[in-house]
Length: 139
Ligand SMILES: [Zn+2]
Image (cartoon, helix red, strand yellow):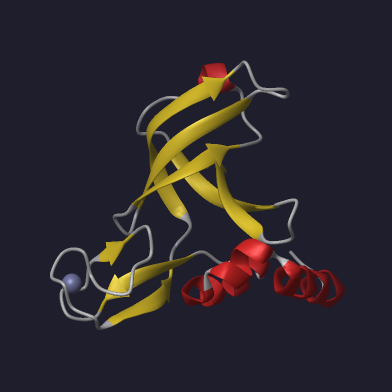
């Protein structure tokens, strides 16, 4: 849970983040992430969710898409521990319950205990530049 003060701090940091400033179409996504909510672009014509967020639906080409709050739940599609990094980290593709597959990181877990199709839930971590980004942990 976030306090009002930490949320204010997160929103102020977001305003300074050059990546967020360079991608205004994703501003709503990063604002939600600062509140620790995961949004996915969803097509109002064919009802399918997609990732990475686009201005039109990649399935039916409709421009009628909207941000919807995702459950934050999914399953591991693939993962790999990057042991040459310092510190090592776990790169993963997670398939959200809503359908899209995200490239992300697994956190707070034992890499040796992870497996394909394992149930996971979203967490948010601060990037150096200020925004919070979604990562996943075993559920
Ligand atoms: Zn569509």
